[in-house]
Image 1 (tube, helix red, strand yellow):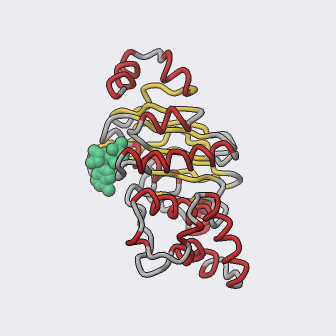
Image 2 (cartoon, protein in one colour):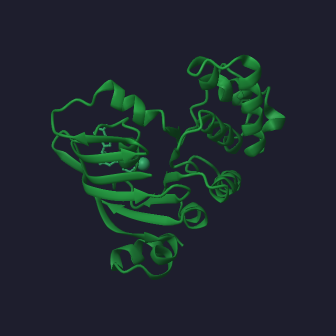
Image 3 (cartoon, helix red, strand yellow):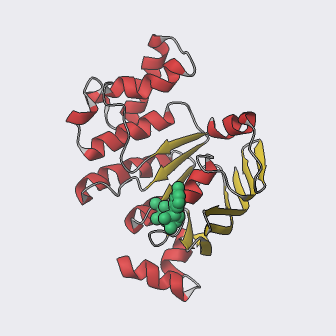
Length: 246
Ligand code: ADP
Ligand code: MG
C-alpha cells in the first residue's frame, strides 16, 4: 500500500535520508527504530509530505509522486497523499479549547462537512475504540498524557486514513501511561489498521509491529520481520542496538 523508493532528503548541506526504500502492505504495522537523529521522524514526515523529499518516489494507494531536486510537488498530488494519512505526534497536539468529542469531530465537520449528528456518532464510536468514551465532554488539559494520546489517535482515525503515522507516540509518557497507548495501538493493529510508527520504545515496536526498519544516520541498516530484527538480526549493529535497550 505504501512504497518508498530511493528517498533522499537533505537539510542545508546535511543529508538526513540517504536512498531509503521500504514497503508497507495493507493491514501491517511497520516500526522505524534507530538512534536519535537517525532520520525516523523525517522519514515519517516524507510519507505524508510534511517534508518534501529531494529525490525518489512515493506511492500511497493509487497516488504516486516522483521527487526531483528543485521541483515543486503539485497541490493535487499533495492533497491526494495527505488525505490518505492520519498523524499522531509525541506531544498529542489536541485543540485545547475544544472538548474531547469536538477534537475528534473537527475534521469530519470542517473538512468533510458532515452534519453534526453523523459526525458525533462516528466520533463517539472512535472514542469507544480507544477507551475514552467516558471523557467525551472533558477538556484536554484535564486528561493524563496517556488519555490525551488516545484521543489524538481517535482524532487521527476520524477521517478514515489508509495509514496511521505515529511519531514517538509513547515517548512523552510515564511507563504506566505508555502502556495504555501501547495497548490501544496493539488493538488497532489486531483490527488490521495499517500503521507506520517511528519510535525508540522497543517494547512498543516488538509488541505492535510486524516489520521493523532500523535506520541509522539516514540509511537503512537492516529491515525485516519483527521476529528477525528482535530475535536474529543479521547485522551486528542491529543486534547491538536492539540489545542495548533491553
Ligand atoms: P529521529 O527522528 O530519528 O531522531 P530526525 O528525522 O528528527 O531523526 O532527524 C534527523 C536529522 O535531521 C537530525 O540531525 C536533525 O537535526 C535533522 N533535521 C530534522 N529536521 C530538520 C529540519 N527541519 N531542519 C534541519 N535539520 C533537521
Ligand atoms: Mg524523531
